[in-house]
Image (cartoon, rainbow, N blue to C red; front, top):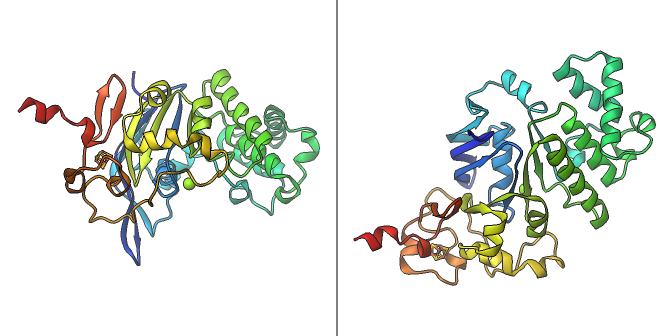
Length: 328
Ligand code: SF4
Ligand code: MG
């Protein structure tokens, strides 16, 4: 059956003083109904820009979706106008961010903010919206919801704010929840609770989740399938089992080898020497070549394609793209 969300050849570029930056440089990915998809990579790999593109939240200018399609339940999102997009955003697709303060309005009470979302999409009366808001706060494990709805964001702890944001995000029963590093700013105990909450939503409500993270431990625990991104491109995609058992791309292999070390540094992914390249439209060859222990002359010359290597497991690397040559 058709995926819930399908992205094809997405290019989201930023037009800056430094030139045109292809932050998302030809991304293909899909999310099935009921699935938790992990999207993994270092900062600057394009994972957040991909998710913001889905919701058309890319600030334009300087950003722009210059090419590609994003189809949600068969409908193309890229061509939707802002009015139609508003019907989807916060309703069928909603998003939670790393820092809730950026998506909560400091001037309004928690209750007003949740109720506004509910009333916008569901046409509830004020009284119904309030009851529903309290129900949502209970669902995300917030104690004393009747008093919390009267408080302002700054009066809550980081963990509580994150719960409020999730309550708001799920208040219209979205089919797809996009969570961008939802626990990075939280301490370990709260982190686990928030992840539990997201897992329950998926298991009990069948909400599909796109979980953006740099933490492979979180992926192992939460996801069904995973997409690994590097420098604006998908370099590997497969089931969590295949990716951990048989990582094909040297970048993925490096990520997995560095997992034990990640406990110490929460933001920096690794351990793989070198830096992510400065993105530009003139780039050629494999983006990972300067850091790759297996780089060959051809790697700097030509960009390998994302090719399926075994059932539902694809990789973008010349080491694995031998089919054509063998055939000669
Ligand atoms: Fe390394 Fe070449 Fe594969 Fe890129 S294409 S990951 S440089 S071996
Ligand atoms: Mg990010």
